[in-house]
Amino acid sequence: MLEEPELDHAALAEHLRAGWGLLPGAITFLPVGHDASAWAYDVCEEPGRRYFVKVRTRPASAAPAVVPRLLRERGLRQVVAPLPTLDGQPWWPVTAVEAQVSTAVEAEPRGTSGEDGAAQVSTAVEAEPRGTSGEDGAAQVSTAVEAEPRGTSGEDGAAQVSTALQLGVYPYVDGTTAWQPGLTDAQWITYGELLGGLHRVDLPPDVARLVPAETFVCDAVTEAATLAERVRVAGFTDRWQREFAEHWRRHRDEIAELAERTGRLGALAQTRGLPTVLCHADIHLGNVLVDRSGGLSVVDWDAPLRAPAEKDLVLVLSGLSGEHPATAEQIALFWRGYGPHEVDPVALEFYRCVRRLEDITTFAANLLRDDVGEATRRDDLYWFVRQFSP
Image (cartoon, rainbow, N blue to C red):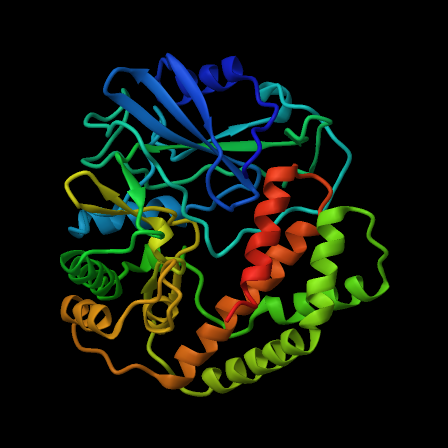
């Protein structure tokens, strides 16, 4: 989320000390990313020791910690994994009272967006924090917060949350996202190698049980119908919501056709017996960080999925990987790194439709919330309108 929550920095520092043994000297909110259920912080313990801290309003499962650790153990060193707590857990649960955040009336939870990668820029962390375990400091198990929080926004636009939070600490990557500038020729090959290596990982049974499997049922199909009805009957007074509603009405037939096609392709894909691999499920270039030496790091492993490879490949092959669609030459470089693969056209088209429909419904649902500030609303409207650009 782009607005800083009313989260007391002293309380946050205390939880970082209790959970990871950190002694923060400075905590800076980062207005980055499109995940409306999380906030990001740059935490500097001392010169040269910096961490990326993610504060979630929805608890993460074990998979976002277990999977990145496994991948690093299998040699995929570009993967950024969470650092474990002093007792070996990846996350640290915090109640709203402990975090000293403002309570608020209930509101519908905000969804996440396709453009979820946050730019992480600052000094790289060379050493693990005190109390970490494992070569890469990634955790193997997870704690959970039982209740999902609800919230609203304060008069100054600051986000307010009302129940439990969950903290995660990551190495801070000295780099910027590849979303806008794209990749060099050499980096396209590396990107292909990384994705190919990911898709060839054989999950141990205990890890595979933690990773959801593709069902080919897209929840956004139902969400699109719900939103269409809400736009039809509601009278909006908020300027951002009014402008959103105008765009929705202008494109309602297109949205309905996309939803119908997505459902139909999903039903067809279910019958094809497609092999599944481990997918990142959101590995666009916004989640690829480039450091000063040109090295790549992949973040946001919040939703790994066992699915056909096309789940990840669609971003490259359908022009969805970054600000600028990959050229034929760049795709050829990607394949050089990735290796041979026979693309299933039904799966590819299904995931192309899913991607677009999920972006449309996510940004639409976000715009209908009353618990975010002006900056987030403006950003959500921009991305919603962009879904209908040529």
